[in-house]
Structures are given as structure tokens and as C-alpha cells.
Length: 204
Image (tube, rainbow, N blue to C red):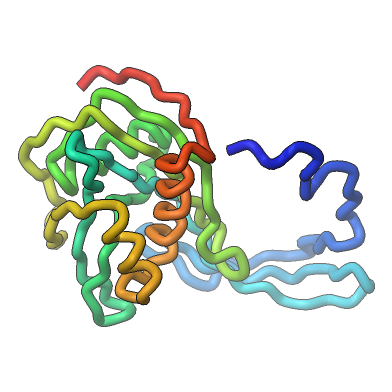
């Protein structure tokens, strides 16, 4: 995505006066795939503070475009919210796995679809104040249906919707998942021509 000419939020900026320096670190929880750390940091004014944050391996999200113009979505129960959420397909990176390989794997496992063309749209950081998590955003097209390969204990419904209906659901608050809201922004920009993707063919 290209910013308007002359508009660069970082160019020429010296951000050293905002930086915090890690002075010490302790791991306060080790989970199955998430860790929680507490760091002591030096602040720009010379004082000290603590920062608690979740260490996350990273993830991908897939905006999968069907030939009929609809997008592939999921309904999944999210325990922390005790609610079923509408989301774009997504999943965490395995150790040593590339984002594209992860996107291909997650799309097939969760939805059954494989795609002949892929394009990376960008990256988002969904919880910058307390997590290292990043989500790589990928678009997929040339979809071919197949069988799901859900993990043990994973339950979700796969469906599709026109982009304008998904947009309405985002505006009205029916969809509140942060990554899906961001994905809808990218999708809207792609469909309007404001953003051009670089597609690559990938063997299915």
C-alpha cells in the first residue's frame, strides 16, 4: 500500500527521545504457546517502570476471494469472550514456518479451500500495549474446495458473504474482531482500486 506523495510518518523523525530501555526481564508464565514476561525498563526521563507483556509467535490471516465475489468467513466460539465471533480464517505460525506456508496451511485446515494465487497485503499488530503478536495479512484467489483438517478440539463453521454485507456487519458492530475489521479495510481498498496487490501463482 503506497501512501500519498510526501506523506511519511517516519521519515526524518528522531524517535530516540521516546525509547524505553530494558534493564531486566523475568518470565512470569510459560504456557502451551504463549509466555508472559515482566521487564524493568528505563524511561526517557531516567525513571524506571515495569512492563508486562505476552510473547506470541505471530500469526496469519487470509482474505480468501471466491470466484463469485464472496469472501470466505468463519464462525468460531472464542472462550475469553464467551461468544461466537465472525472472522476471516487465521492461525498462528509454527516454529520455523514462513507466513505464506502458514497461510496456505491454515486456509486448507480450517476451510478446506486451497488457492492458486496469493498476495501479501501487509501486517498488523493487534495489541501493541501488551503483546508482541503480529498478524501477516494475505489475500488468496483461485479457490478450490476440499475437506477441512481441523485440529483436535477445534470447532468452527465456514460460510461466505458478499463484501458489502461484511462491511455492513463491521459498521453495525456485528463483527468486532480486530483482525477482521483491519482485513475489511484492506479488502475495501483492494476492491476500490486504492491498493494494488502483487499476486503470485502457487502450486496447489
